[in-house]
Image: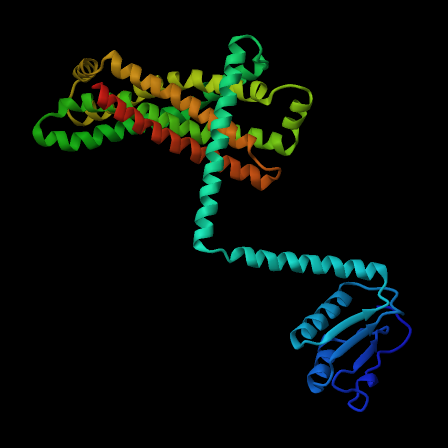
Length: 377
């Protein structure tokens, strides 16, 4: 604080103040502590007006702001009129910014106090909006697919091949590990029960049907949702942050054609193949348990497996895999395109993509189960 004279408290003596008389303080080179002024107010209840004269104020910092805020809050609390005279423009601007921040904080506190019904209604509105956005995105993706088959959609072939490699060859290690373990677990759990009835040979049937109809496609879908769906959301979310998607729109290139279609086609193409690969690894895992723990010969195990399977079961599992691939690709691209323009928003979009894909995979699997039961498959 820079000024010319010392602070003077003599204006506030009881002899010169009455019930509605104001006192004038002149800010000098040494800013008084807010406690000094507050103590003066507390000792003389007849003070009803406070005027601070800042005509000689030439420099200031956050200390000045703290001083003014402390006095102003106490005056509001005690119903005392507070006025600052001849304040420089820079200091006025600083106080105005501080006042705006205080109002925002108060508004935030008010927003936190929401009723239960308000929160339920707000959640319902958000859910409805998300459903509309999802249906709209699916519609745009369908239009892009139609444009592609009519030769009007554009995307780079190299991008498509890169996504195929990422969804296919680079995903084989994790799919191999998980599928083999799932087959081992199914065989071991089934063996414990079937051994009680002397029906160990039917472990082959259990593992084969479970892997081909359900677990192969389901586990592969969950793995790819965590690996590929999250990657798609992170890639598109980062492009959203860097305004690359806006640049594509500016150049007249559809982001749906250029970004979504190659990812969608790559995952829809590779998921059935990964599902079939997962089925084979699961059956192999079951064979390890059956042959190694239950005295079943390899020939017996694979003969029983072959007898228990037919093309209907195999086709059903492959069809599920393809549909799960489409769901994963759409969920990842949707959340990526909806991402905000910050690093935290990209992380949230990635999490939302995985959750959305897994939830819809489970729902779709339930729908398949009901339809298969109704059709007797």
